[in-house]
Image (cartoon, rainbow, N blue to C red; front, side):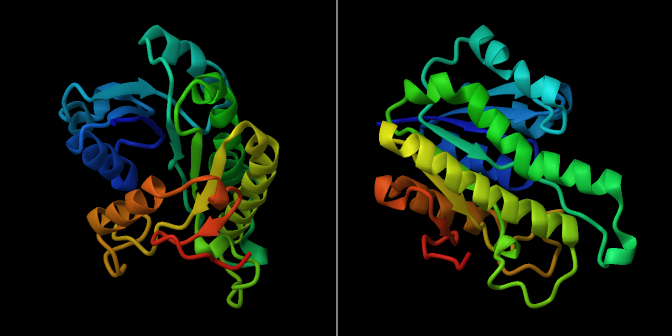
Length: 230
């Protein structure tokens, strides 16, 4: 049975690959991007993919998401994939920049919670009640032996903690809230030396997502479903 997925940051990289693979297997995709007119590849994916504008760096844009989803007659949403994210450049405490810290925490940690809030009525009506946060193993406090990338590491650790709170709150309703590391992927963020192609990463993540149920609620996992240390 096909499902309906809401995927943020779907104009390139992993988000675009999620839209491609989901549509190819017959699922319906609501794909968000900051500018629908500039998402040419996303717009060519066919009738299974509906494009909705969303700027996850702008709280006002997120607050209007439920109205935009209602306007296209979205109906129930089975799975939310909070994929949109940004990196950071500050490598040392001497380089820390307030504006960068605020932007990275907004996009990577705060926005996924606000998107979940906006989509919650439609997720409650869905069959799977599944929320997937695309996080990073760099958000692992236990594994942080190198420091650096302060804003990115901190924002992903914050996302992991926020997801755990969301899992505790929504679990009694039958929700599964999962924080998932996509691996080191050859995207604009991951760079050309990364181990995985977007196709490989997303195919593996979808196998994990397809098998996720309430026993996975609140967990922090790798793309292949294995647990990662907090």
